[in-house]
Length: 343
Image (tube, rainbow, N blue to C red; front, side):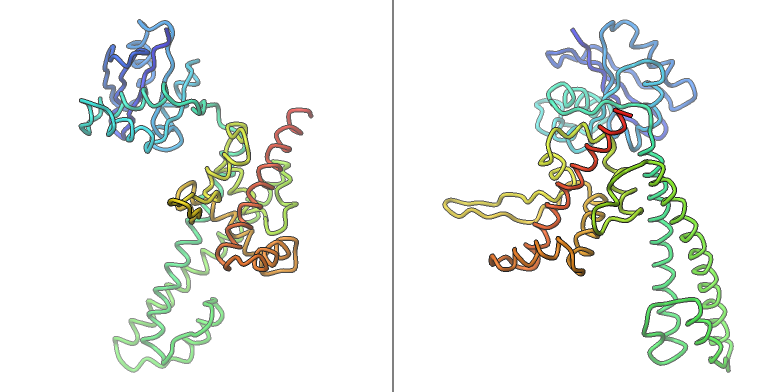
């Protein structure tokens, strides 16, 4: 009989609960987050000969403890917080929100689900994910500085700068401002500091793009053969998909990335609506590819026009195009894995 040990990870502590196949709790253990956390967990679980570990959000807060358990030779599964919370809320008698109940629901969720992902050693997809996240954070920070600079420029000159902010344009505008009081001089000073921050981020982003392009080339992926998918989108797709083999079909992959519409039928009326679920980062990468295809003469544009001719709205046609791109992405990812395995 396999004993399932659920772990509810936190920054300072990790709570483990062992349950049997009848969902009976066999033991609880809380360990402080430290260098010896895995040794303590394995020592406590030594009485369970056949055991599997289940870590909530093994790619998030539970990343380190999950990888350390794998390195110790343990079998580790990953459970999403949403699935675990549903088990806890719908369970009878243990719906209170506390660490032991959370850990118990994690173990039961893995026991009753048929689509649990095994936690494995990190591969090149983790490198791409880290690089893409860093690039996205820098791009968001640059956008924040641009918004603040726009607001500052409106206070210095009528209309501010009406076009996209660049370092050259803003420096030219600031050189034409003649400060005649202390407040204006302070505004100009802050504006120049913001420009310097943006210039520094531009340099960082340029280097980040080269780094991502090199990492995508090293992955030997064929995703860039799809029109509208460049190195950054390819790195996002690979990094946030992980092991594509965990998706048995392209429909499962579409459900994961949110391009599969949700049925909202009632009675004889059959209709579908936008799917707000799924991995939104992955969905955004596919959306960028769809918009690129739609705005240019490509097979995606032909597909879009055909959907419009069938009476679809613009949004419905874009959603259909995103689903088609998702299916092609899935085929390329599977082919890449098969090619790598055969080489």
